[in-house]
Image (tube, rainbow, N blue to C red; front, side):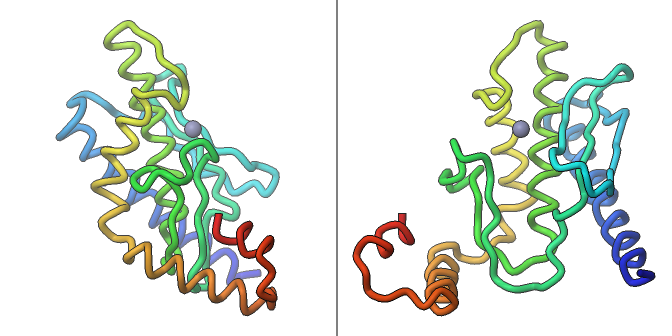
Length: 181
Ligand SMILES: [Zn+2]
């Protein structure tokens, strides 16, 4: 039990520092007055969805922390929304890092906060995961996450081999096709 609280403290500290670095970057490169007025790191097990946007006091994020941390350090696949999961810049990825999934979700939600901040500033609206949001998310991913990912082609092959070993896939053309889709 105490181990859990130690981990939780470490992860919370890491997340807060990461958020501050991203916020600083947003102020330097995107909107100089952008400030996250509300940052909630919610460890409630029942919370599944994180969110980012406009709150009463201004832009904010609320991160569902549970299950964002990957303590094992093994190669795994992190998934983004299905409609852009295959995008090489804003989609899912393979990683061994215990922090990348958490970082991805934080960047995703800060991009929503930027998006709503931009709506207010420029008096327009766009879709939740539309071009405005994608543009912000792409910029943040390109600075804070993508440069730290290992070569994805090799990682994908290694991951696929690992899965095949676990599942013990026989050379069945149907399952093969499904596995490499
Ligand atoms: Zn979203």
